[in-house]
Image 1 (cartoon, helix red, strand yellow):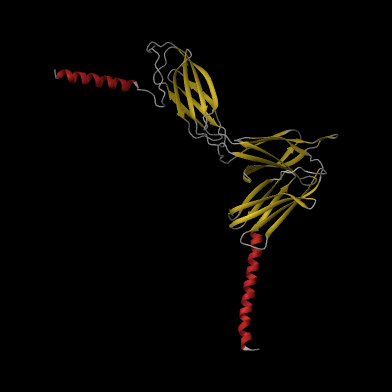
Image 2: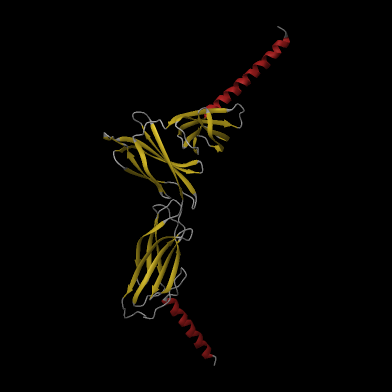
Length: 373
């Protein structure tokens, strides 16, 4: 063998090693990002992307196939995904279904790779020919605090057969699931109400989607799903109110995962006329938070019967709760029976000590002027 051949051999070996390394990196990429938990029916589908390391510029294509033709498709562009992270997406097919067999295809592609999808998963189902599930979602009511549903078993000529079910609740923002929680092994032998709270901060006046999936494991795995939209709103209510001739205090409870940043308005009425109104900024409240707001009228109310209205005014200046009551002030021998106006600002008027101090200043000023006569 010539010297030239000995020189070329290491170069070829190095090239082969680099090629093997490149192939191993490619195959590792396919293993480091994967599709899990694919579910689909004729209305919608959801799937989860799991990554073991950081990725950017991920493309996910979802296709609904019927009679060997793609009848609905959507592409998701994921900017980035962190290591050991799941991202769950939801797609609505928007079709007019026909009876038959359907295939759902979910495929991941990476912009850094030119050989197509790194992984593809399928989900097959039938429509119009499937057995009726043993359970169904009778009702679903989502709001800014959480979600409530009613599960009901199927009633046959043989009666009701108890069913064990796992229930998954999803909160979806756009096409991405931002919160998930579960109820496992729920025994359904009659109409069964279930509720879950969203343990995540919501945005006021924002549209969200809730998605409920129920899995029955016997005799074969059957999954049913239902979705419903809602608009997140701040909410709070009055739970306690104390009032007398000197002031009032009210306890307010947050009832939404949208932070309540509104105000509490106290209005006092005498003989049909408003004699005072005080607006106090509320502490920030979310679901389960409560706080007490106190106000004083500035001076003791004179003898008589007054009307008091307390309003909880929300972030959008809408009235979330209102309590109407009365204040009955009995005669007091030391009271000034001349009705005094209630300050409109949050801070009370001058106290008796401040008033006395001003009178003394005026008197001393006059006495000093008389000395110069």
